[in-house]
Amino acid sequence: MILNVYQGTDLVGTGEGKIHVELPGKEYPAGTFTGELIDGTGTKSDRFDFPAVTVVAGFDPTGNVKPTDANTVAEITAWLDAHSIDHTGKSVKADLLALVPAE
Image 1 (tube, helix red, strand yellow):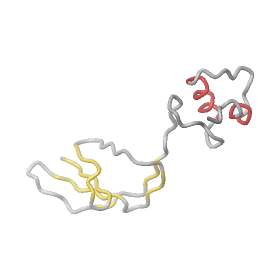
Image 2 (spheres, helix red, strand yellow):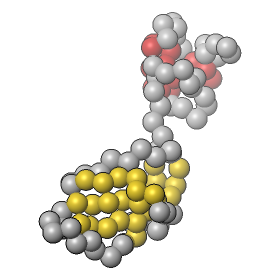
Image 3 (cartoon, rainbow, N blue to C red):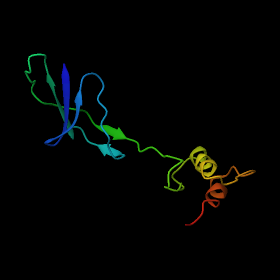
Image 4 (tube, one colour):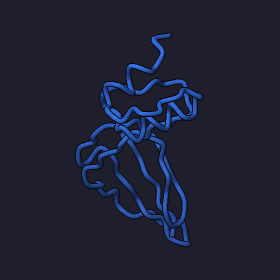
């Protein structure tokens, strides 16, 4: 059985088993995504709505996006470590963020 996943009229994922779809982090209300199943003979099911989906955007500490107050202390320290910035003795979020270069 194959699952096709649509956002509006656009096919955003297809395959057997788990389907991975790259999405920006945000809340998607129920019905934003629809699906259909295709059996071994190629017969498609009626489209059905997926429930509401919340996608949490991940933070990549090795990337160029700098941490902000929205990040956790662990994420900020991981970013500082990845960018070779010493944060010895600092454990408060504001103190850690002060070490992040402005440019």
